[in-house]
Image 1: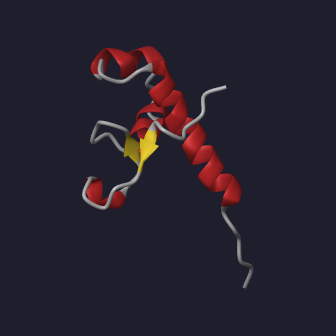
Image 2 (image 1 turned 30 degrees about the horizontal axis):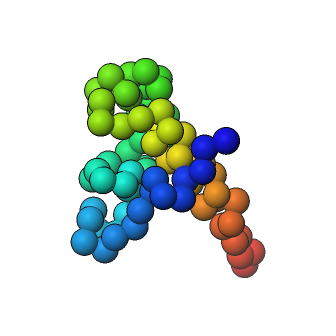
Image 3 (image 1 turned 90 degrees about the vertical axis):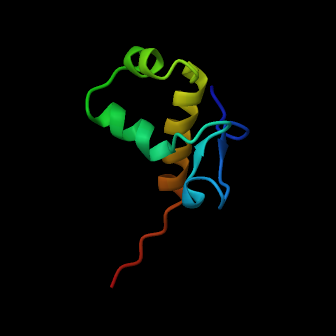
Length: 75
């Protein structure tokens, strides 16, 4: 299992504080957008060779964790 801690960082000085892959300016949401548009893991790694498989998996895991912890308030 890939852990996202240590791979995903939030810094107000980088991308307006959006969660990004550590050492890059690639936000988690961008990775998810690529995947939702049909890009494969291989496509992403080919176009962004400075990313690793673990980075992409960490982005997915981070997003899943954020949604898991989301609180829904009913009106």
